[in-house]
Image (cartoon, rainbow, N blue to C red; front, side, top):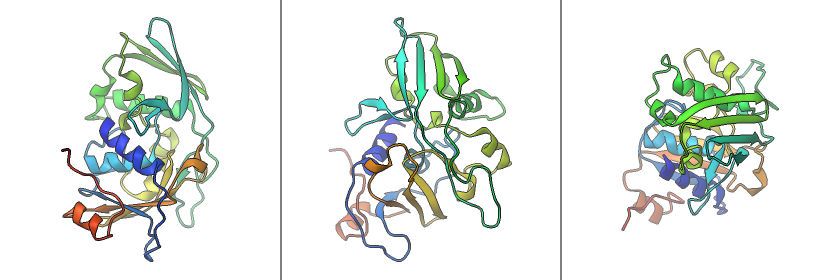
Length: 255
């Protein structure tokens, strides 16, 4: 998870190359190895989904281009014993894809709150969710949200890796009312995704590509490039496609 989220951070935060529009939304083109099963941070564990989720969502922390943990959706303080973390949520907003002909309360200007992060923890812990990622809660003793801007996390023992874990997809926020309104379809189509990250999902062409546009209400939108990212599904030879100009970046095998 950490490696995939770092890869997405490098792609979404540090690329300024502009591409001509190909008539289909264009943008910076990057391959993923298959169709995401779903785009649900508390359930998805396939590489393709995690890669896209790390562009659509933002956790309390993130990894910079060198893999160092830095503030993302929140700043934090830590108690002297290393057990209590207090996160202060930055001003930021959710982004939803409008449903034609239907006005929704989350269409615009819906702030991200501490409860959105609390609900992510609750979904992971709830046996009814049956999340395959629930084991990521190991070492977390308690989580509370005393107000909209404050999330408090208590550990059972000091953990030097805790802040890095908060950058991974299981701990991305989830809006309660939106999740309930999807009636079991959360993360399955673009209209059932509410995201808080640097990009928003504009189109999900199943088995072909996912098109993301820059989220203009993201708290650090001015620092984000490019304006669009297209994740291309099922490229047989990414290196050849990169060489031929059909992609703008691709993962390369370790030496």
